[in-house]
Length: 287
Image 1 (cartoon, rainbow, N blue to C red):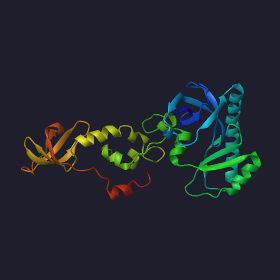
Image 2: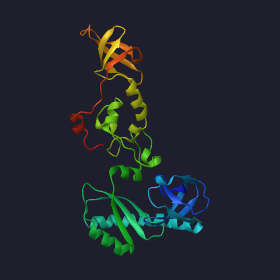
Image 3: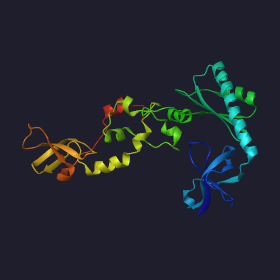
Image 4: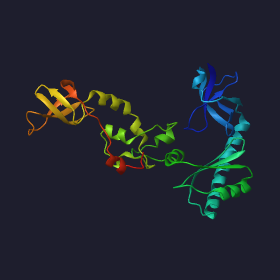
């Protein structure tokens, strides 16, 4: 077992494990830690605890100390410097005529590196830009190309539900979502209906997926062969939430389907929900 604390560096960001080095920290403490990109100031999200060593992805970096007033002053100054660096970088990008959109700028706590985050449709040759920025700021410069999901997480905004983006308010990390989830939840496969402002599938498709997966296991799907009190038939429609099925009886193929609860049928052969090639092609690019 190894003693760790969890620290994050953004209000809505990933949690990282650090070695408290024998000190005791509580949730909400600001600490100065050593990271792969230099010394940083972060917030303790989970206090001291022991976890199995196999759950630690790599060698633990140490907590250097509890942050003090001087550290808070540096953090505030860095925030102001980031705004100034953003404006300068915009002008430099324009001067170099690069097809890229600057999204965010971050100073490391020790100011040994400045990170510029940007989006672009393809690869961008920014070598001359890096040299130009380095001559201005006289420190290490790193440009990182990010995706549209990461851009939304950094910039924020309102979703189609009218609430602030989940990724910008409480999602520490992105969860995998798929077109199959939307189909299993009986949602319209229109890109407008199932994609967020970022243009990718909505993160909230994941929230109730476990419940839908359970209901799919106990509910006969379209094409399933079932026995009912009125005879054998084929499921032609179903409602996962209510559990009601529409069944076309074999002995009355031209009659209207009967409506019956899933609890009152015996499944002879179930079917599967699949996303066909045409649907995949139509929704290409939003996963």
